[in-house]
Length: 71
Image (cartoon, rainbow, N blue to C red; front, side):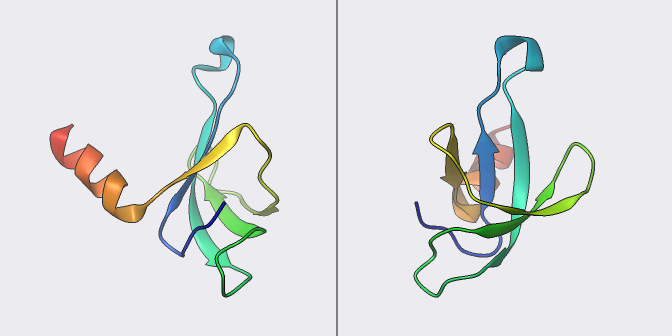
């Protein structure tokens, strides 16, 4: 997994959780873009150091902007 500041971390959740969590990656600790990341979660604004598991994926800032345009 690789990311850069401004990308989004999406963590899948159970169906009852409406699909999981999304957070803005506000800091990448390694130059090669590997975890951990500092993420600001959309659901509560909390920032946390995250070591993503297999249930997570990165959405690039460009892909997120395109998704919002299509809307």
